[in-house]
Amino acid sequence: MTEQSSHVPWILIILCLGSLLTTVTWYWLDDVEFSKLPCPKKGPGKLSDICKGCREVINKIRERYNHTWVKQEENSLKLRSRLRRKCNGFDTAIITQENTRIGTKLVYDGDEKKTLKVTREIFHVFAKEHPFETKRLDKCALVGNGGILTDSRCGKSIDSAKFVLRCNLPPLKSDYQEHVGVKTDLVTANPSILLKKYGSLMNRRRPFVESLQSYGNALLVLPAFSYSFNTDVSLRAAYTIEDSGSPAQPVFFNPGYLRNLSIFWRTEGLKPRRLSTGFIMTSLALEICDNVELYGFWPFGNHPYELYPLSNHYYDDMKVSPMHAMPAEFNILLRLHSEGVLKLHLGNC
Figure 1 (cartoon, one colour):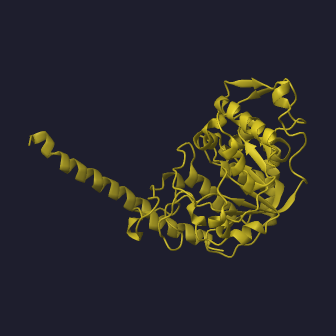
Figure 2 (figure 1 turned 90 degrees about the vertical axis):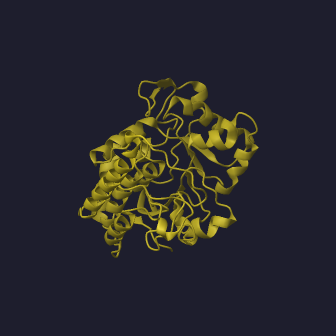
Figure 3 (figure 1 turned 45 degrees about the horizontal axis):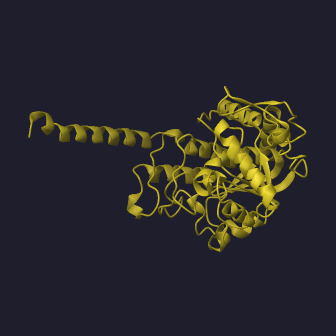
């Protein structure tokens, strides 16, 4: 063994000690910086697999969460007013034939150097009228896909809401109904799902149409104009639904709304590369709903109470995109819960 290679173990020991010292120092901070949380383990494992520092972080979260929740109408109205003034999601979140005319130049919110001119063909795919029935909905349940929903028995509570929003075409088959419910008024579809699961809808499209059956006549929201590579596959999804006679109602996120929403939350201290779908839908729900309750939002790999390992999603363990700042977003949601603006469900129902 050379002299250089014999030094390697000592270097590793020094690095580990440095990491441990940093972690111990971080434990004593009063305010948790969610954007710098240690990365928890995901998926199957033992209780002993909980990552270093995660137990202390979860305990701090429980301290903030474990108070009797009371709706604070004044706080709720203030945030709704600011969101409507800066983003106006009720009128602009979804592209319609009323707010986007033929010839309009759409600027992609994920790549502002690229634009798309609305042709007559594309215009006819847009919703003819506003997709929301009234200016305000009473109670909305927004269902994330976190592994925390597994065995939660929250299905009945979710289905009791006036309006139920779901993200990214989650499965609702019988194995999950007790925990996530079945009612769906709006569901989003990330184009990456259409790419990976349905072959970009370039060949057989029946599996995609059949997968929509569990959502009935729900609004299917597609981010067709976030990036130019999303456009064609999103339009194919809309055409497939129309051609098949599916009752699902395809609509498109307005890139201008998404851009304004990103700017709004940046002023609140949230600066991810892109907002997650769940956080976008939370923002929209806070505008259109009097009462907002969130299920399945938990960005850590261990249950908040029993601390057993969780998968990323209640139906699989696919990793979250690094473009999203999930812990930082969760910190905002936890703050809004503490302020009585929305109700965040972390325990079983």
